[in-house]
Length: 353
Image (cartoon, rainbow, N blue to C red; front, side, top):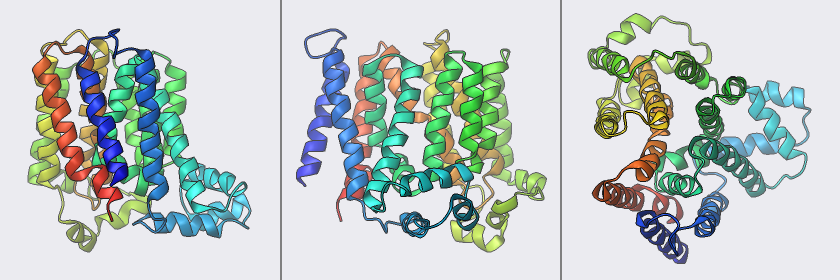
């Protein structure tokens, strides 16, 4: 409880900080760095106190322990996971066999990649801190830092790739996107979407709105399963089995479509006041294209794993709106919603046993 008291003291102070004018006594780069230190500490601490047997963690824990005396080649064959993540696990296992240290090292690497991406996207430490604050109140953040570690690392690389795309560093963008695929194979379509945003200059928001509407109709009517259900999906074909889909709750969950569409409408409403902001447009295109991944393949079991790529973009857009919006009411609403949602399904859920 003391930890939660500390967390929400920091969060409330940060909310006040977010509403103050830049370069004031309490709103400067030094205060931003102080908040950043606290947020990073909170994130790492949650990782360190979470049981090593928590959900999918038990699999990572067993495989990390099991590869202690294996060669890299044997580790890759036995793990049957994406090779880059196995290499990373093996490198860490050469220095420690402690599971807590293993998870903390992985998380620090995740944070370094994530924050490198935020720095390239925003180039403003205050907004970078606010985006991290939103992530820490976001249940999906913990889904991929405590549980789906491979995909979480891949998502961090995708955010870094978006940063390179915004900076127009195409080679680094492509290299980072490709690297993410070798951490989690589901990232492949996302890597292609990132390239599409960067290189298709004539791609307009209105075109994406039309495509979103058409794909939503197909999603609701379950027609995309008829069109794509026969595609070879390799190791993911098990997700197409009827029993797996039904166990997951059925294909094409309307709740996912509703969630994505709600945020799309919210961001489009804000877009009318920021039509010339290139960063906002870039991130909005990313959110819409990443949503297409769900709308196209939402019929498979565990579709939340592909929907999460679009969900991970939401904090980027919200944080950026806190910077560019002239509406004090909008800023207050965003901060209040973030705090309330965070209290309900954020950090308390993971630190209270």
